[in-house]
Image (cartoon, rainbow over all chains, first blue to last red; front, side, top):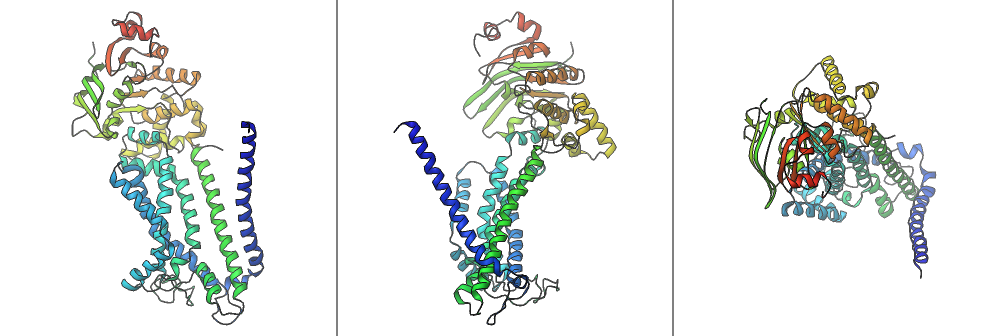
Length: 295
Length: 252
């Protein structure tokens, strides 16, 4: 085969592979949205779920998912920011650093159900947190840390070395250079990383079944005291998320309309994840243009 | 004869086992432009970075010798690096403005150690940008991102950022090698103007540039200082054969 021919064949094969990947995605999204969207009504989004009767909604599960996400990010973002700054700016190239990197890799490859059971034993039982948003948020932090550390570290590394030198040559200390110059310059990448990891957290189910629980008690959305047990902000209450609710409806759902609620909830979940992904790109591009001065 | 502002004596620098600078002695007099020339890898940038302790950032570097700046040793243990680097500032090969507005770039050094009022800041920023000969080009766009300007303008914004903190000595590490000839010419003209107030030490690959703007030239080769002296003399009647060979393009 001449090199021209092999080039043509390779191009065709690569194009077919890409088309295959895109087709899978279109098929999945299309199937979920076509079966689910007709069930997405205002009633579904604003009513509490029902255990036995028909006509339940996903109001509390939807809120729980967002609340859990916020709490998870509150815990995991500062930790991963610190770890990423250490790895990108301070860590020497030695065995300790490679040990830390390997630990992070291992953390990211832990099966989520194992993390869930670990969280159950340690936080739910041992620390007596019970099935709670807090237990769930800590378990999700385990997943989120490696993802966030890696994306933040990548954004920090992408800031040119010359920016670092500029800061030092102006008499800034290492820390002031990082805080005042490197971090603002890396901000677009960091934000994109946060939003993408938020998608992962939002869709997680297995780790939450044993930590945040499978029940969504009725809470009051007007009670703003997080210490009150019926407040929607109380982090110590069990909180079934959207993803867990979908799993439960399909395994042990006894309501007559379980299938249609599950389809609608799946559509909502997928739409929220799409919004996360698209906004990550939009915000990243916008900030990049602002930061680099390119139009 | 005016006395030197910065005297360096017997400067050695080691990267681990490797000796990168082998005993450099150069003195710099106030209000002069001093060029450091030599082939790539001869140690001229390394030497320049010793003068404001930028090499401190690199692990495994050992520096010996004396660096006498206005009567104090740059490498004395009680030296304040912030003060030192505002007195001896640096401009790099690649223009490296911060990804902020022009105004914030020039204001950065000023805001670090003092809290100037808004009017004071405005004044100092205008003055610095004027001295760096870039004011006319940026005065209407002070809030525009510094990265959006041309390379030559970015380099002069970097010079303005440095001038704002009133250094005594300006170190320039091949400041025009990433720029087109017109921008380079503008930077050179700027440096000629700055000579009246500052002492300039410039590393350059461009021999014409060294001969056009500098008062003294030092020629380095393989970590050694071969020859240093008045530019007018060194370029016409160098003492050493190596200098003559390099200037005539026989190597490097």
